[in-house]
Structures are given as structure tokens and as C-alpha cells.
Image (cartoon, rainbow, N blue to C red; front, side, top):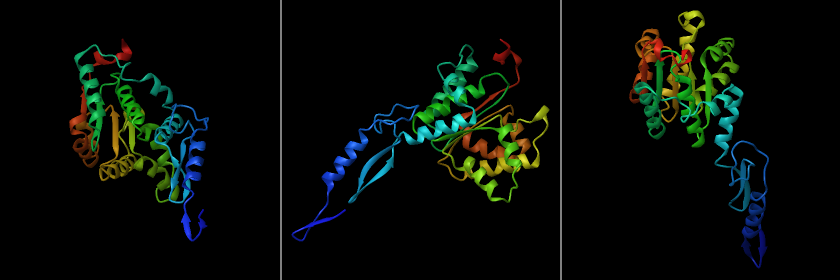
Amino acid sequence: MITTTVGTLIRPSNYNLNQCTLYNQIEGTLEGNDCRTCKNKGYILVEVGEYTALQACECHASRLSRSLIHKSGLSKMVHEYTLDSYLVKEQWQHYIKNKALEFMIHHDRCWFYIGGQVGVGKTHICTAIVNKLMEQGHPARYMLWRDEIVKLKAITMESADYQQAIMAWKEIKVLYIDDLFKSEKGKPPTQADIQIAFEIINYRYNNKELITLFSSEKLVNEMLDIDEAIGSRIVQMAKYYIIEIHPDKRKNMRLK
């Protein structure tokens, strides 16, 4: 809106500012984060030149992440699987937790991989990391491999539906793939499994700003045996944050 007085253009900035102030003071109804910037509306009203416009609040990415996590079935785990609740009694548990803490600080252009013995808290520690990254404002998705791979393989790979489905896993800022290459009764991954895994991992490998976490029952050499292209990309990107727990039933905390 522009008004003219004696040939002079006057921007109604005071009016816009008042509108922004009034809108931004209104309490919203969004649940989860208690954000005092947008008052739990998800958006704030800002001046853009001569006009006003809604702008996503800084809490928007975190809220989106939590919505995606909720839909994925991970929401209960996010509350239960925290760094504080990760049991630390043995030296190997100290090592896992310290690596997780280090990764939270130095996660830029790095991946995180933990593989090997079941029951050592691989999902627990990765979920705790994802939760902290979401608190920092990074949108995240949780991919339970054995469930999501079935859904992706059910879609014709050349179709638009497939491209839309797989791009959601490719492009998200933080992706946690849980139980990579987990299969029924220990069967080896199929060529379709490997092809889809490579498509996702290679995209994220070529877009270094994306953060990827993996948990798997496979050790690194086993991952390389399945597919060297996939395994070597993981090794290169997660080389500082590769944790391998070799088979040892004494470390299975579910048996305690």
C-alpha cells in the first residue's frame, strides 16, 4: 500500500509495524515446543518492503521434524532414548556415548555409523543424537529399513510416485536409517535392496551438507561385501564416527 501526500511517497511502515506486533503477540495452539518467538503459531508476521508477510518461525523446522518422527513411529523412542538414559557401565559403553557427544558437536559434513552386536543400544544412541539435532532446528526423518524398503519396492521405480517417495529420504537434512540391510531370517539383501540403498546414500554422499546416521547388525567389512560402492561411501563419510561392536552376547543388554 502506497499513499501520496504533496507528491511525496510515504511508506506506511508504522502501520505495518503495528500489524506485525499485534499478530506476533497472539498465542497459537501448536503443541510440542513452547516457542516464545511465534507464540506457538509456527509463523511470525514481518515487514517485506512495503508489505507484510508470514515467515516461518525458527521453530518450524523442529516442529516439522517431530511431526515426521511421530508419523514414523519413533516419537515414543525419542522421549525414552536419550543420552541421559543410555546405560554406561562398561568401557565400550563409555566409548559409544563419547563418540555420540563428539558427533553432536562436529556433525557438519560427517556421517555416523554404529554396527554389530544386537542389544548394545545402537538404536538408542542414534535416536538420542537425532533428537539433539532436531533441538538445534534440523529437520529429520527416521527410516526403519526393513519396513520402508518393502514400501519402496512396492512402487514401480520409473513412476512419479517412486521419485516422490524416495526424494523424501534423499533430501531431508538429517536421515537416520535404522537396521540397514536387516532382512527376514538373515537372508542377503536383494539387488533391489542394494539399488535403492545406493540411490539414497549416493545422493546424500554428493550433497555433503546432509547428515546421515546408520545403525546395522553389519560390521563395516560385511557392508563392503554386500556392496563396495555403498560401504566405501559410508566409510569415507563416517570414518571418524564408525563404531563396531563385534559379536559378544555378554554385551547384549536385553539379556541382562
